[in-house]
Image (cartoon, rainbow, N blue to C red; front, side, top):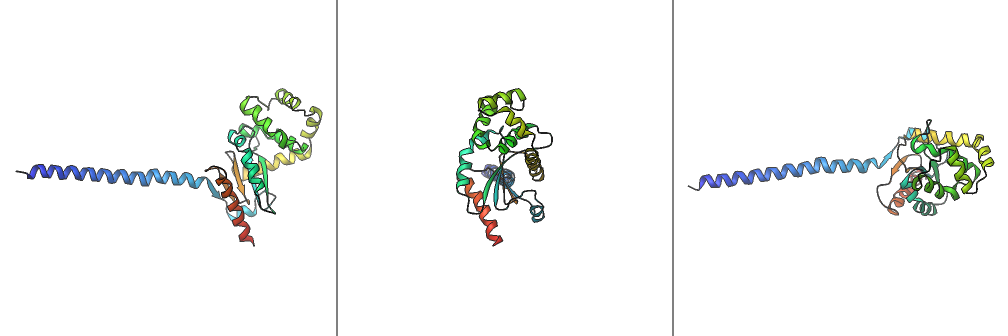
Length: 224
């Protein structure tokens, strides 16, 4: 008389257990694996052959590929300064603006960066450029807007115009394009460590600085 209810209860429990196992399996194989894939994409390495053929000129470097139009780049300025202060002897941090042949999107402000860099005044005007582009929504690729910004920042228009046409600016623009294309940079900020590692920020500072410095020191120890 109790067989049918007991069978029904047993069947119900079996269904619950199977459903739980399926849910657990789904979580582990799909959700966790997707998260793991995201973590892996935040740090990638190029081949040894690609390292040898890299257009990057300097060894023992951490290069930040950034853009004046990048909100996260602007927020990280103080953290990058602190990272630079922690760089070991014989190494250096280099900032390059993302660039491409079309000079569109985030790359559109690269001529401004290159010209100010060649003039030797880029660091002191970086924050103002961020503010104008990101906060004030001023299109500094427009010559009139750019000239107004230059005047507001006390930068001589004739000196800027002359510097923008120099071989040094062209060489820097070409170099930034070559590095951006070679490493297929599509997001900013991206950090290139020792020509080998491409790191996207996946944790807060200073933990992210620790990771970059660890990669730098690891490759230096292999060279010794």
